[in-house]
Length: 252
Image (cartoon, rainbow, N blue to C red; front, side, top):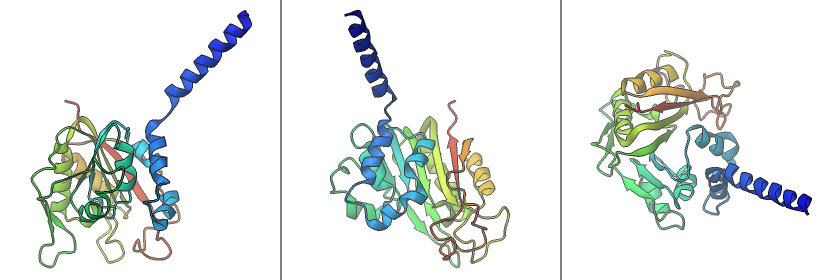
């Protein structure tokens, strides 16, 4: 009888341990990845973009308040909003027209909030990159602010404004996660690197906004991207080298 009791206790402890070690955000992201809302083209990018590992690196949890800056077509929106729908909050800010039209009435997106609707993206006469006018994101206590492959689209003014908005939206200790296509350090701008950006420059600018550099990841390092060609070129399309860097708003 004692042996049976001991075995039962061991099984109970193992079951409890399994529950504790479960990773809710991983499971919820994986469930969102299997959603019928995603197109085949979006699914095909999973292997390259590695969303579970990327969001884990940026410390996203299922009960957090997360802001995505410039979500575009909603590749990450389709994963983040459902994963945060039960316990957390998902905010999309700036460049949100497509996701607002295509996703706001879909199951799992009921709590999705569109913010910074007064923000304006514009190009100065003759400019290649966007500038930005915006007051704030309407959020001041976010746990995480994320932006994916957007930093390169902006002028120095636009990048400065983006970093300022992210800083003001985060609570102390909050994470700012940025991913973008890698450009060679200090390489002059040209038609081939127009959608790439120097990670050293990005770090400098983001630190100047008040952030602390926490960590970087090689999740999206691609040795065979020679940083020579435009990111849409056949030789690198879908396989660009991208820097993945995590910053934190100081706790005090």
